[in-house]
Length: 243
Image 1 (cartoon, rainbow, N blue to C red):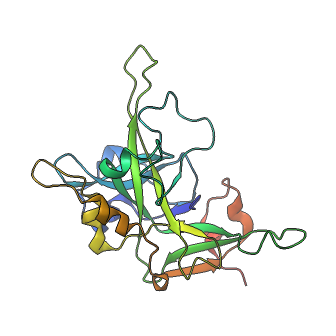
Image 2: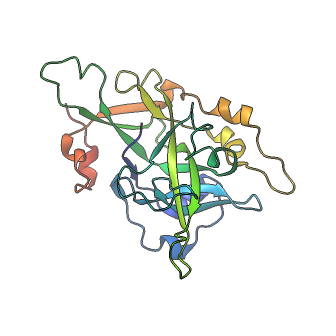
């Protein structure tokens, strides 16, 4: 799974990295690095518009399906299992029609492998995972739009998203049995292509093939301190390695 990450790269640099249109300054004028992004935070994600142009937008992390009666008060849908997303009511509409890339500098995971076998259970070790080449991670995501139809006055649209997960690769398996779906640059266009009037959408067969564990050699996992456990903590010190 993926329950916390970092967002350190400014929106203009994110747009440049993903070859997207210049971001709307009205959306991102107050950007500040976030060293401990938690669920329900508004985060950057890249998606194609109805004309096929690649754009950077703000999405609430925690997908709210269009048919939901209300925004969940707890347990937001921050992750979707790639193996079953096509059949789950919350995700099956977004998978073919609303795919995105979630830009993160790194993500946190807590070592759970062999933890349950110790008596008493050992404290989970937080780990910070980044690309070895120092580039942004492009996490495969789904997005949705929702509006409160119970309100008699027109309410604003909520754009929300979740991160797709898959089985762990060789780097992640000693830490956790799940990991985010990470896409390489050559796959971004196919993933984002949900079809326009002039271009057919990427086939679901190809989409399924993209939702595989990334090559373990691209990732670096660093043990860090437990200060990251609290979302109240948000500074560069969280990323310091522990010996």
